Image (cartoon, rainbow, N blue to C red):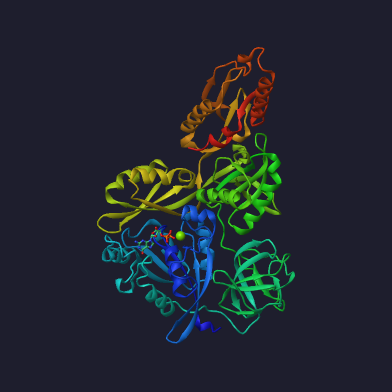
Length: 602
Ligand code: GDP
Ligand code: MG
């Protein structure tokens, strides 16, 4: 292998603009896949990806392509499109020197196009602007070229036009990858070192890693070590992913390969695998910071499934380094975990994968965002003195007397919308406590609006609301804007005077009255009538903000069966007892378990 002949690139685009279809075409063109092969979208391997038509895990494929009598080694890294998975995109980008930026020639630039473009720019990657779907009768390549010029200052003469579906222009695109994207900048003539951009678990071979080799060469059988713990390892498995494994004996700097060090070998994203001769001095490459935007509790549907679920979460967390897992427990739901996710879709996909790939049934609590508080006096947390603490559970919010300042996570949201909806979109954003940034025209019919928004206001239903007020024509994407000073309060729920831990929430001061009323009303709907009256109160610092009552009601499931069939009567009582197990009792009031999960969802 000659480094000058290696090209590492990925395809980035707004969702549905054709990444997976183009990846299929590239695989066909390089002989990996036969045209018309049954299995289309070979890169979308997970069942959840096939069902949802989205790419969750970035997968690599190594392709050979001969151009001007030279054979090139092209490493295509397919990246997930959704905003939630930008972590995967960021990681794969560290191994790339360029990207194909696809834009649908009908739809034009969308919010996510703006996000992936700025990501590529930040990482100094060569961008190959490419219009897709030019086969469609309504495609308007000239108009979209003008958009690219006005939004990104892209010279229209550098824009390629393709139809990934029909295969038009794909060969020219591949040649542009070779011509425009530079080979990786690496040091060949030094000790081996590689950084890990992905890991997954194999039943027999342990942890397998996707590694980008940054210097030297690596061979099967070579002694290596992890930068994080300096433990000696032996390279047991080395392969190209085409995307099925093709074992190789040796690989050089610049290549993206699969490496495994056997069942006890380990490996984690962001770590470096290096030659054993290399001094420990070289720094551990930090993985791109993972920001958990949403936290939720996960509990086994049945405590007998605890071990199964625990095992499944461990395996899945290894494959999805973006989640954070801590142990959690709740009187209503038993032993479980609190998991940090990149966003709601990420959460959804994670639980769906738990089910499909590991047969574990889980229940989820309502999601919440993390907050930060600055407290009076420094506190010792994990050996560090700090006066800032991260709050992922409302119950951890310190007493207001000990707090100097509250912070909540904000994002910079980008919305691309037809001009006739500017008013509606702006009021939606203002209503969600957004602050407008300067807007700019995409063309004469579309506008790009940007807002600084609190994450807590967009995490649940913002996207759906935006789609419905713009008849589906607006697109939305966001990037992290860090923590901003805020005014926060903990709101508690009392049932007949007793605090219900699981129902405490952190609320912005301006939203208190509204949230208190809504939560109390919703609880009234969800809690069944009982033998005694039930009083529901939403309380902040001892002050009642909302109150609802459920009148007493007498219910005897066997009342209709006087002297009737004994077995029938027993069965009914048993059913009732089982029903009880799924209840949590607070002040002698039975609350169905679902209440804790559903009441905070919108
Ligand atoms: P991704 O979300 O970016 O991976 O997009 P996909 O590759 O899954 O494509 C989304 C949809 O657009 C699918 O229904 C594709 O068949 C369709 N599509 C992709 N490329 C083309 C194209 O060049 N022409 C047409 N007409 N449809 C395309
Ligand atoms: Mg796809």
